[in-house]
Length: 147
View 1 (cartoon, rainbow, N blue to C red):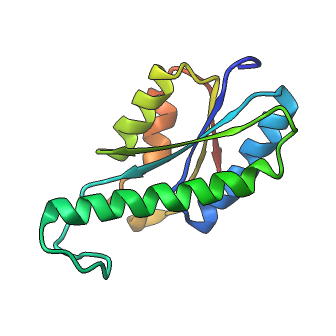
View 2 (spheres, rainbow, N blue to C red; view 1 turned 90 degrees about the vertical axis):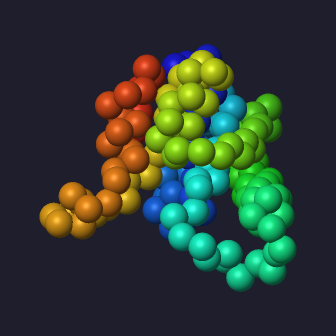
């Protein structure tokens, strides 16, 4: 943990932003870089996020470019809070969110994953997939789940 990067998945939500603050603190404490990860999951419907396109491939490209731009901007903002020698590595992947987080953590041999909890309880908890819980159960490294 003390020599490996911290992986911090984000969906650009307020909860993910809160978890990112913990990742920044941990990175500064252990003097390690942050891998900031965003996963473009497959759309469950035919919505297009208000982006005008002619083909599904074009939509995919535009969503990927949008994610990269937003993640790069966020990485720049985060670097302002890190010690001078540290950096933020923005990574965009596509596919199943939980599987991509686990795959990234294994491929990059990260020391810790800092992930936001969605905060669902009761029936909502049963009906919505809990990515943070699944990551905590399947990860090979320590996982900090932030509420």
